[in-house]
Amino acid sequence: MKSTLSDRGQTVVPAELRRRYDMGPGTELAWLDTGHGLLVVPLPGNPLQALIGRGRGEGLLDKLLADRRHDRR
Image (cartoon, rainbow, N blue to C red):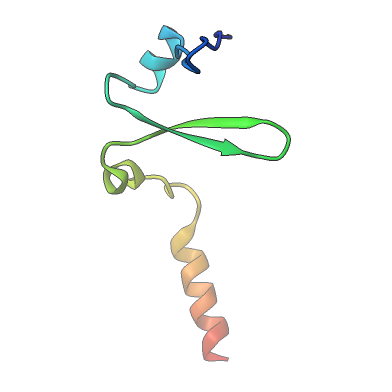
């Protein structure tokens, strides 16, 4: 997908991406300069709510317990 930059520096987020990432009017976008290009990331309206469930399946409890065992030694 691509979009064009206007003479006022504006662009359009393609409709398919707006639907996929639940972006609507007022959605804030973060523009990150990676040094090799730009990365555009939609910012959630409620950042804490957006984090719920992000660590699922990562074995975080096991990692935490292993770190605590290590610290005790």
